[in-house]
Length: 225
Image 1 (cartoon, helix red, strand yellow):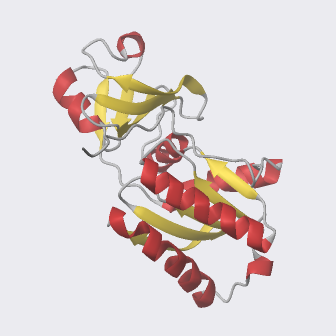
Image 2 (image 1 turned 90 degrees about the vertical axis):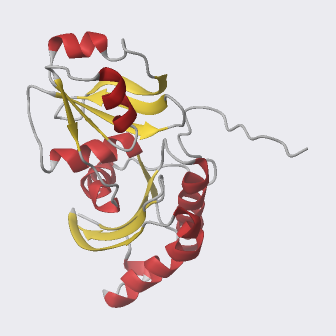
């Protein structure tokens, strides 16, 4: 049972959620990616002031740890680590793909189906994984270049729910499939809450000094001439 500050800046939608004992107290959302660094600390300050929470009262800080936007992940993880270090709090890392699946499961739970979160990684590439309704891992998080044969083995056997900002291009490539269902999804730190609470109860914490985001692939940039 814990009071946790949940931070998500893994995509263009950033949000901060304050939760107590696995229940959402309040969430603040920003959908302007370029403003994550500017708004994140303001959101944290606002939430703590409105709920009369001091740093000493927090039990842990959770962060959506990737995969996702390189810039967004760096902002969120750096902020979470800085607060953990300054306030002496444990750090909880939540898989962004599990977080997304948890969000879908709140509204669409099918024990016989599989769940495939998809984050856009540009061109025809996505960050993805496949989970059961109990969040058991069928395919581990990985970067995938989409082809018509992607997910073929899983689609041959079970219904799969696809969702996330990378699922639209997969829908266009796959077309109609009897076992494929595409669901709308919006990123939100609220979807971290249950996962963070479970991690806290198990004492699953990260090393604040050495933790880095789950990028899944190295960062490359084009040098200016």
